[in-house]
Length: 106
Image (cartoon, rainbow, N blue to C red; front, side, top):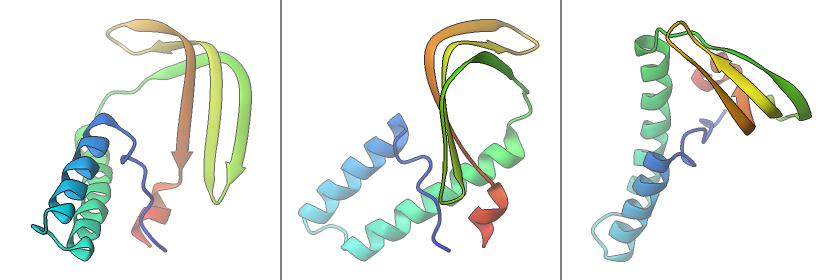
């Protein structure tokens, strides 16, 4: 199974993609190598989250929409309360995308 493209829509993922596109356009990098870099980026982000993040957060809110497609859950919450040991924050609207991390290593 191909690696999920979970982190590519984050700020760092979009900047990496733009930079790789520019390098491919300028002939500095082959398209195949750019794809390998993106796949490694996804794997590295997954590994970093599994090994380095120790905080736990609870989320409560009004479930506006949910969807399950291709082993990926998508939740849209309104008036969501994020609560950790250090602080809590209310967010007007949030989209949460979740998948089984075991699928990333297959």
